Image (cartoon, rainbow, N blue to C red; front, side, top):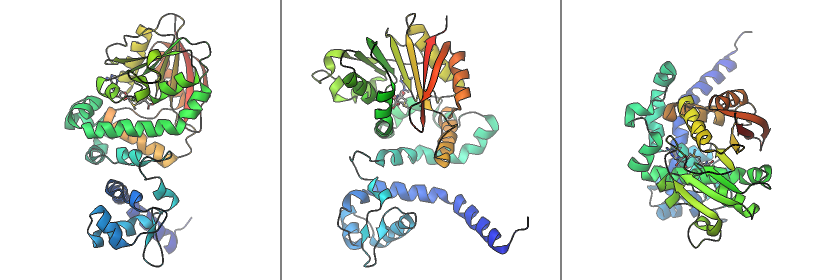
Amino acid sequence: MTSTDTEISTAVRQLRDLSLSAARAAALRAATQLGLADVITDTPVSLADLAAEVQADPNALRRLLRALTWQGVFAELEDGTYAHTEQSLLLREGTPDSLKDIVLWSTEPWTFELWPLLADSVRTGKAAFPKLHGDDFFGYLRTEAPESAATMDRAMTQSSHLSMQAVVDGLDLSQAVKVVDVCGGRGHLIAALMTRNPKIQGVLFDTQEALDNADRRLHEGGELAARASLVAGDIRESIPVEADVYVLKNILEWNDENAVAVIRSVVAAAPPNARVVVIGNVVDASPEVTFTTSVDLMLLLNVGGGRRTMKEFRTLIEKGGLHVESAQPVDAYLALLECTVAS
Ligand SMILES: C[S@@+](CC[C@H](N)C(=O)[O-])C[C@H]1O[C@@H](n2cnc3c(N)ncnc32)[C@H](O)[C@@H]1O
């Protein structure tokens, strides 16, 4: 096949575009930080009003919006005012389908520190994060970058929210008595499972900082408090909870060594015949290849881990001492693996 001039110019255009894709991520972050999506309502807004409202330089704001409207985030109307698009509506604060915190989490300052170190990680196959801040990524967030940790918690809540209903529908707890969500973040999943299954007791296990910000329904005085316990600890050491169901959702993306250590903590805590339910993103069938492969590379950089195929998941889980009884999709992204402690 020979290359025509048009094909060459398309290749050049695409490659130059790719090489500056960090600018697009930065523009999206800036618009989100400025809160533009909450200023534009049903009525289009002029540049001057927008600039005044978010306290921005009008010319620089116009340039930011030019970069974004080109991508379909906000629209510039013929009279020069700005209106929402389907994408920009998702940047609003507090709406049920908001992706605001997911956008912020994906573009946190530490991500921009890590991307230039990708070649190093590809050479070593290991995380680059320890070179910058030590080898405990989550510990760093909680102690050194608490705003980023709070963004993580909100982003996890947003992304869990997107799949929550499917998980609650797909997880049969009719025979369960006590269910622990291991590293369950702010506890929205365990709260939803307890609401759906009014007889179960629910335990949220995570760091103290995560528990402090947990779903109010689980705290003293909350509507689920009588059936709920909040247990703080370090998953790499032990899980001081005996339950008949252990839920592990999106926590095995760490490097193999840490992921296996997590599974071994569960195996050590679980009584005989306990169910262990592993829920995670599998790359095999991802409908968003660019997003999935990008997350995979970020996980390599920060925790030395990554997204796994179903086969890799099974191998890892069995290495940790669990037996995979069955596997089924929860939705287009998530799989649910029913496991038992291997005898
Ligand atoms: C990727 S989030 C997953 C949260 C939740 N399972 C979900 O699906 O939304 C990882 C969680 O692990 C917790 N975590 C990280 N390191 C931990 C540790 N050493 N001990 C206990 N929890 C930890 C974090 O606080 C965070 O809530």
